[in-house]
Image (tube, rainbow, N blue to C red; front, side, top):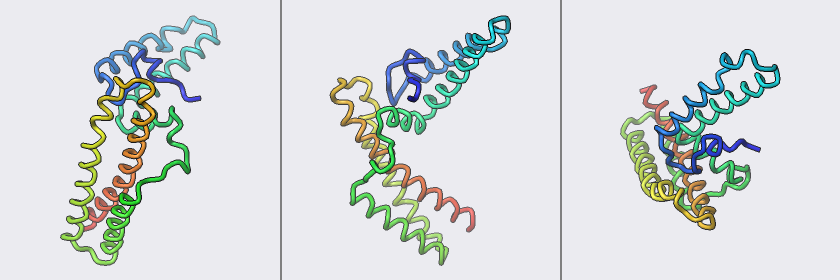
Length: 178
């Protein structure tokens, strides 16, 4: 079972945590669980402190990074399992079209065509971001029974962003070559 980083930091589960509170909590626990302050403890207690220090580091790394935090929350709710990741057909068609354009660029590097693909991919990404923002911002305030639907929306967004990220990475490689 994945540790509950939000509980560890005494914060509510949210896609938009208070960054300053997160950082304060991390530094406070870093001091509290620093191995040097526990050198005289029993070996068992020293091991426990080391585990808590590691938990603190992992929690901060995960919760302070928006993509990792999103994947973490979705994973905690069992929404990142393989085979449960179907995406809408219209989106897949758009991505397939972009990928076909990318494959054409493999054979014939055309800066204007690459720019068109980049513009399309960025527009699609911006639309996704704008559409999910109210869900991310409002998640913490939702009643428990409304959260599963919001999490489904976030999962779809997350998976779509992964597809677009691969396209944008391919475009960056073309840009580096030209």
